[in-house]
Length: 117
Image 1 (cartoon, helix red, strand yellow):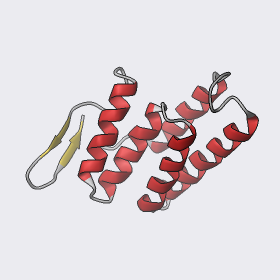
Image 2 (cartoon, helix red, strand yellow):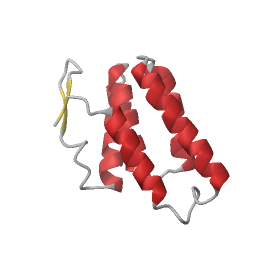
Image 3 (cartoon, one colour):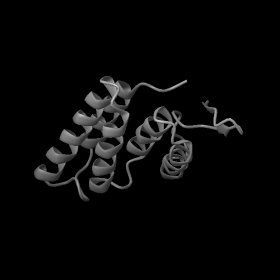
Image 4 (cartoon, rainbow, N blue to C red):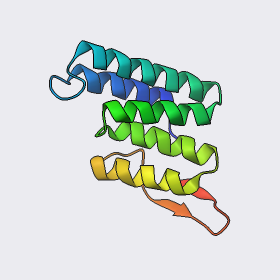
């Protein structure tokens, strides 16, 4: 079952409210980051998963330790059938935050069927 991109968007907003240092500490970078997140959320809602992947990648470039972005991009990769990249992003999200409940065990069968628990 895929998680809610909207719920993750809210988590990202809360995350940003506590960022005082690092690449997102400047208002310009924070604004660019939020713009990418909003655009990626809209792309997901429109079913444009390839564009969402591009936008998540741009947001990750602004905040490379954000586990939520990797988690969302993972699901978008799965939606377009790129299971290997989906798995890589899921593993990265889990490495960045081992307690992240949205990414658990990922099983990929020979038929490229993926299940997120």
